[in-house]
Image 1 (tube, one colour):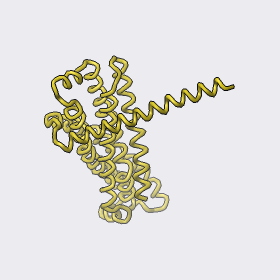
Image 2: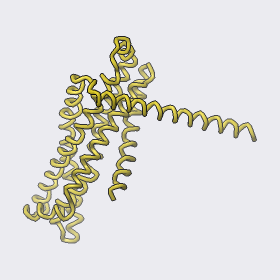
Image 3: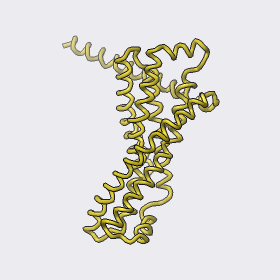
Image 4: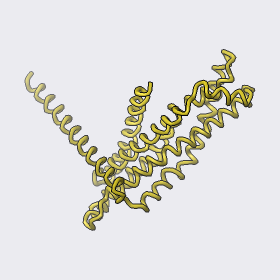
Length: 260
């Protein structure tokens, strides 16, 4: 009876130590990345490249996703509001849903799948090929050169993608309201202030910035400490995507709860 309990204690003890070690290493990693941003020692070339990669190259996917989302919301909300003869509130309901939850969360998920996984795979490959060690030998800080530009670029560009998602998604719902539910254009727009305030859009921007920081930090961290093998690259990439999505969902709940 004592032996199984002993094994159980050892197992959970090792797991606990591993989690504490990983948390401490991740915290130090974030602090080093933040120091690279504050001290402006990050690579300007890397920063501009990441702004293009995260922002402009993700814009088309964001536009397509927001179009489909806006059309879907327009149809679903329109059918629901038609039961109560309140089709005029279609624009307000769509704006609330997009600005508070859908645009920041879904937009962040798209960036995770496209750019977060790319960050993890690229840095993990550099770890496997010993390029990070080569930077350290040449007295180049790999975190300031590789990680800090990616985190800063994601923090700045994901809110911009949120605005694109919001505008295009609302525009798609607007077209659905006019064509399928014959809502008057002036009434459609006039009802928005009843449910949506400028602070809602600001909170959406705040969420998008936080989500951008999370996905970049997790992706870079997983790649930076990847196992030096081809399998390690695959594990780092998969783990970065899964961890980022879970972290974004948890953070979204916390922010929404605070702003209730």
